[in-house]
Length: 320
Image (cartoon, rainbow, N blue to C red; front, side, top):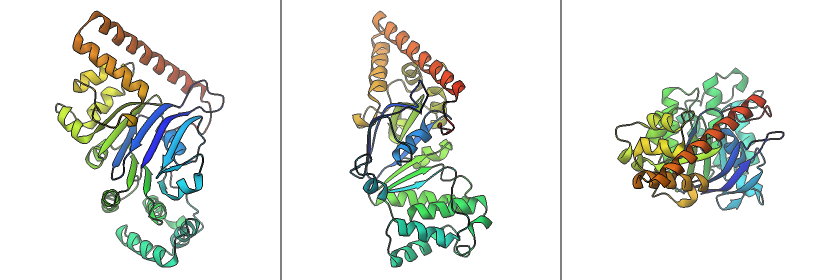
């Protein structure tokens, strides 16, 4: 299980938060999709989640371990595939995976068995002893995936893991993700390929301007989408100068994620959305004022984000 409670991250010399008051609970057995436009806060959230970046405020638990208080135990339960497949390219594929297996304390018998199985599934068995430097883009992605899974972690955090994979390998990885969850584990999956997210994920969160604006199960999406795809809904919710409550009402007629764990949603976003939807239903003057106020707040958030982008606070600022 992953628990994120009121996570906030501010980069040095930045007036704005890259991630603000973000709360999510990802349950065991879930493939959880995490989507957003470039600069929305996806990569910052993921880097905080994996311990790569320190966070300004909040709490993160991985498989029951507090990331701040017991980072080693938390990280032992994580298998992370980044979006840029950084590897030691002077090593062979086998040496690279063995290095990671040593870091995680995987026995020789277990690592050999696991490496052989994964290499066959990704059609890399004949290339394991070649230098990674000689690998194609897709082959480097494959060895990164194998290295991340070699210790059979409870939590997989995958940031654009399908990039560069051939169709057969992409299908194998999607199958592995589902198999992993069927064992009671967690997959946290970020991708811009929304068709894959829609087909593969059990639950999805959309992030905009560093805040979670919607969390919903696929069954809720199918029930309320009114013929719209995830792509249609995503584009409407993340459109510039569109207030989140108004967009939610236009897209589905009510708040998505109403049956999800309350801890899984951003508290501020949830309260704002509930007020706006209630206002539409009551069709009162007071409701109109709340919606107008919500739109003004959303507009200010968009303005702050643009100003933050122009200042370009730090090179490591979220690029996704």
